[in-house]
Amino acid sequence: MAASADARSPAERAAAEAFVYVMRRYQVRTQQIAFEIWVPPSRSAAPGRDVRRYRVAPPFWALTLDPEALTGYAVNTRAELIRYSHNDFQESAEYGPGCRELLATATGTNPAYLCEPLTDAEAATAVTDYLVDAAASQAEGSGPLVLGEFASTPQRADGPAALECSNPWRPSSPKSSTESSPAGSSTRTTTSSPS
Image 1 (cartoon, rainbow, N blue to C red):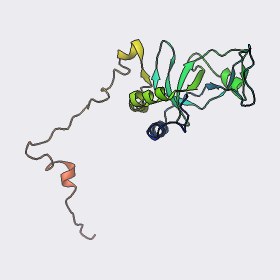
Image 2 (cartoon, rainbow, N blue to C red; image 1 turned 30 degrees about the vertical axis):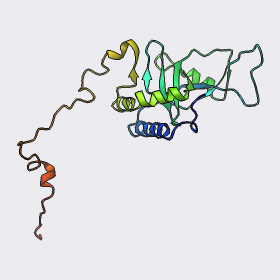
Image 3 (cartoon, one colour; image 1 turned 60 degrees about the vertical axis):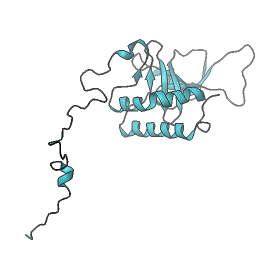
């Protein structure tokens, strides 16, 4: 069973919505060329005929990336947890409105992706294992979390590590660290003389 917006736990839904908020707040670019498989409600698949139908999917932000398979977990702009994969779309497929125009904009550096909903178990894994780290990575401009063989390679070697503090604060004296701190001086009252 795929994880629809209504079937997810409130915690998963809230986490995905918070992720979308952070991505919009930090103006992280979405992957725009996204499609999903679509089966019209009035049609069922004809026996012996396997024709794929595509429609435009909401843009998404990648949580993870497996560079060998060009796939990973993501959150779309509707706060739904999805799997995306690089796809060479078939010419014999049926396309919904706007699909061919959007597909024509795909390039080698900005490919087209096929998006599909995650199962409930996959959605829980994506939230618990990747969502927070991916939000921090995307917000700082490092991109999605890289999985697989390339995961041990640092994404950015020019700056401090994610949890490393570049200028640790040291107290001025061991007996009291608030005497010379800005917080200690902010409680003083001042009077102003009339001009």
